[in-house]
Length: 334
Length: 281
Image (cartoon, rainbow over all chains, first blue to last red; front, side, top):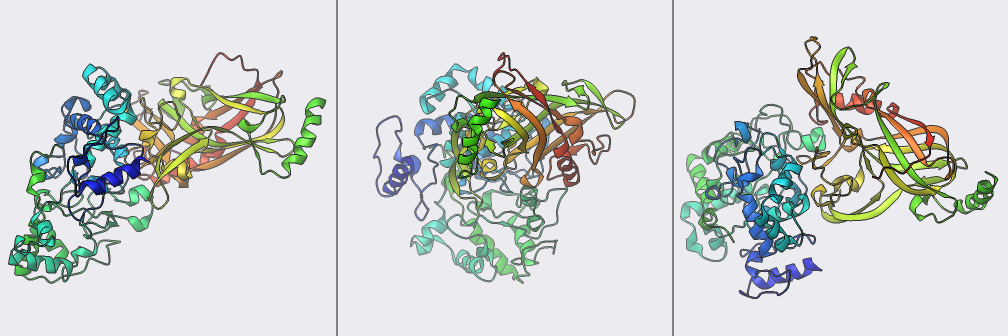
C-alpha cells in the first residue's frame, strides 16, 4: 500500500513541486524527486522514505561515534566532493587498518539491486552493517553501537519521532538507508544533451559518446540511466591477494574475479578506479580496456583489444567527464 | 499407555491423508509441552567458555560456540512426522533471482549460545507418546537464508545478534556454526593464536537424523535432552596449522568440507527428563 503511494507520489513529483501528504508518514515530495529519465526510486514497503528518517540517517552518516574509537563516520570513506567515493586507493579503518577494496560511490545507490563490489549485501539496510562491523572499517560491536546511540537522549527522541521507536539495529539501518536513498544525481551535461540541448556536449564529447556506444563497446555493460547493467563481470585485471570477487559470495568458480559493473555517473570524480583502486586515472582505465585486459582466467568475452587511436582515447575520456554532475559534489543534503 | 494407543489408532488412520502434522496445530489432551535442552560439550567435558581443552594434541580455548538448527522433525513410533513451527515473522528478502520479496519465517529455529550458557528452548506442544527419531538441519537454507537479517525483530533467533554476530554482513547469509577461540601453536602450554571456524552457505548445511527411542509424556518427561559436541565438528581440523586456523567457509573450502562432514555425528539424544520449568527461551 505504502509502496503504491510512494510510487504515485514519485511520479507526481516529476511534474509538481510542493505537494505534501499529511500525517505520520508525511513526505516531502522533494525527497522522491528523480532526474529526468530516471525510474522512480525503489523504496521498500517496510521502510517508507520520510524527511524525519532522512534527517536522522544523515546525522548518523556523519557521526564519528559510530566507529569503535570514534574516529570515523560513514562520510570518512564516502566524500561528498568525490561523489561519495574515496579518492584514496583503500580507505583506512580504525587504527589505520586497510581493507582490500576501494570505497565505491554512493550516488544513486538506491537503484542498486545488490550492494558491495561483490553483491554480498541484499539491501541498503543490510549493507549498512557491513562497514559498521568490519574490523578493518568501523569495528563496532552491534550491541555497543546501540548502547552508544541510546546514551544520547537527543538521538532517542529523534528515533522516536522518525520511526516511532527507539534505536535498534532495525531502526538504525532503516534511517541510514533512507538517507542514502536521497543521494541521487542526474544533472550532468550529458543529461542536458539527451534532453535536447545539443550544445551541451562538445564535438569531442559527442565523438566520445559514439565510441562509448560503438567501437569501444563500453555500453555493453555501462548502459541504462545509471550507466551500469548491474551485472558482475570479470574485466580482465590480474587478481591482487586472495580476493576472488563474486565467487567469494556464490562459491561458484564461474564467478571468479567478477565484480560489480559500476555506474559511470560522476566517474571523473571517483578516482582511483576498479574494485581495488589500482588505476589512478581514466587514461589508465582506457589503456587497460584498449589492450583487451590481461587475459586472466575467466575474463569476460566482452573484453577484447579495441585498437583505439590517441584521439579516440581523448574523446572517450572527454565524454566520460561530461557525466559529472557538479551539484552532487557540494551541498547535496536534502 | 493404553489410553495413548487408543487415541493414536484413529490419529494414525487420519494421518494417512496428511503428510505430517504441525506441533502447534495439534489440539488434544494428549499433548505435552516440549522443551529442548541443548547441552554443549567439548568431547566428554562440559563446554565452558575460556576453559582450556586438548584438541588433537594442542591446547585450545573456545570463546564462541554457536550453531543454528532448523527443520526439526520428530517421528512417532507409528511413523507420523511431527514438525515444529512458531509464530511467523515477515521480513524483506531477495528471491533466488535477487528480486525483492517479503518472506514469512515460520520454522522453529534454534541458535545455541553455549559460550553464554544458554541451553533451553521451548518448542510448544507435541503429541504425547513414543518416538523413534528426531531430525533437524544444521543451518538455515532456502528463502530463510535470503532474508534481510537487519530487519528481523530482535527477539527472533534470526535477528542480528548484538553480542556476537551469526550472520555475514559481507556475504548475506547465516553462519551455521561459529566457533572461535585461541590455540597454543608453539607447544609452551599457553594459547597464542586466534582460531575461527565459521561455516555457512547452503552447500555446507547438513540434515542430522538421530534414531533413538524416547517417550514424551506429561507425567514422565517433557524435556528432551540433546547433547552437541563441538569438538566433533573440528575433529578433522588442525587448529595449530596456519592454513586451517581460520575458515569463513568461502575463504577456506577444505576446512568447511571437513567440518560439514562431521556434523552428522556431533549430536546425541541423552534422554527425556521432567522439565522443572525454571528456564525460558
